[in-house]
Amino acid sequence: MGDPSSVHTVDEALSTIGFGNFQTVLLLYGALGWVAEAMELMILSFIGPVLQSEWGLSSSKESLISTVVFAGMLIGAYLWGHISDNWGRKKGFLGAAILSAGAGLLSAFSPNYITFVTCRFFAGIGLAAGYLFTSWFLEFVPTSNRGSWMMIFSSFWTVGTIFEASLAWFVLPRWGWRLLLVLSSVPYFLVLLFYKCVPESPRYLSAKGRLKEAHEILEKAAQLNRMKLPSDTLVSDQVQNLDEGLSLVEETQLLSSSQNELLEPRNRCRPPTLLSLFSQKYIRTTLLLWFLYFANTFSYYGVILLTSQLSSMTNKCGSITFLSVGSQDSRLYINVFLTSLAEVPGLVLAAFIVDRVGRKVSMVIMFTLGFILLFPLVAQQNGVLTTALLFGARMFVSATFEVACVYAPEVYPTDIRASAVGLTTSMGRIGGMLCPLVAVALVSDCHQTAAVFLILAMIFLSALSVAFLPFETGGRDLSESVHQPVVE
Image (cartoon, rainbow, N blue to C red; front, side, top):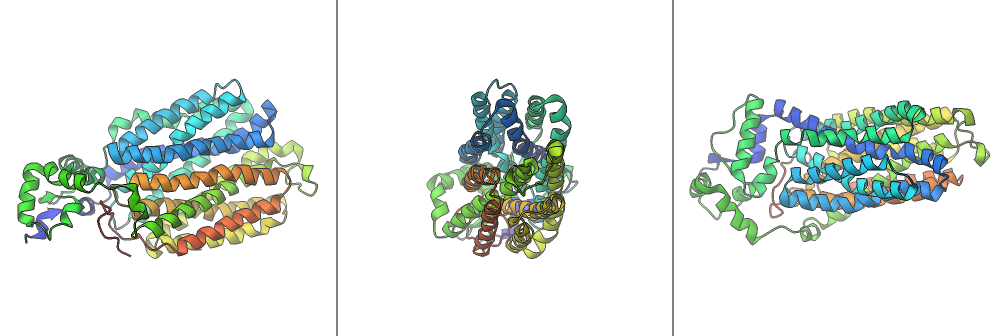
């Protein structure tokens, strides 16, 4: 048996390189994609009420605007994951960015309701790939402080929501919804503009046996970070875990001469499939994550839509006097803007505790706090208290959403990561589809108590699903193959 120190993996290389200038550039690019998705989704809080008034839409047609976007995202979530796992992370978010930018821009010129919802449906298919930016960036971050950096990355979702709320506040009253849609599509065009400036994930390349390409990217990373890579040979985690059956000395010689030829036959012999998600090792995690994403997405958008619906409510429901008619429009922007700001302290808290107490405990703590703050809204409150409670609820529910988006890619190995997270995200999209149909309809029909109870139930069940998840991912290296053991 050879000396194990004669080789190193991507995780070991990243730990040596550390987090520096290289990852900062990638953070900014990935954040641009995250901002773009957040803006396109946040716009739903403003466009629905405006189009309802302009085109005389019913409540069900207004709700359908959000629902078709999530329907598109449901289709796109697995599509882009499949492309990403088979042809590369970059190809996944390139196709998605093209579709989102094009359909998002075209929707601004829609002459009627049918054309508009059709364009937003195709934009939704592209928007589904937002999680690819998370998985891609995750694969460049060293293990030791991965949670904190991923929460910093996730904070750009909040930047996107705040920017969209500010943009709507400034643009909608002056120039209307069409210009708002045009401006909101700009970040996706910027993603396309700078696409050639960022590399493919070396972890993905390593899992595919393309070690020479992975090594070249890591070399560039080391140069930008002013560090030096280990001088020994880069190997895949799959190869390192098979050293019981091969002499490591012979293996490193083979890798030095023809690294791809060593790994590709093994990958062909035992190709990973999504059936692995239902293996004994992953089935419990898979099903619990699917429910977590469904319930968490439902509750997150429930709080957002609750804000916009209550802000748009006049005295038509008798005792609901959240707004006077004259202040309706400005109050909508103010309340959505303020509750968007709520995500900032939530993310700061999450970033502080996620590596200290772990992903699971962090989510349970914040779900509990979100539940407590939302509960008083089962009864109607005055405008100031309602805004304050929605502020607090969104602070914690949004933070749990971001921690879940870190946890899911950490659980699954590189060779199925994007597809697995894509399927998991699809479950969340179903929650996003159902939320506007149920929550908006309930509030519009003056059933605020029922709407809040429904969101509270989803928060409670989300926390329960987290408690039963079998694996804590904090401090663990990312695995490359479904055949590697998962450490509990």
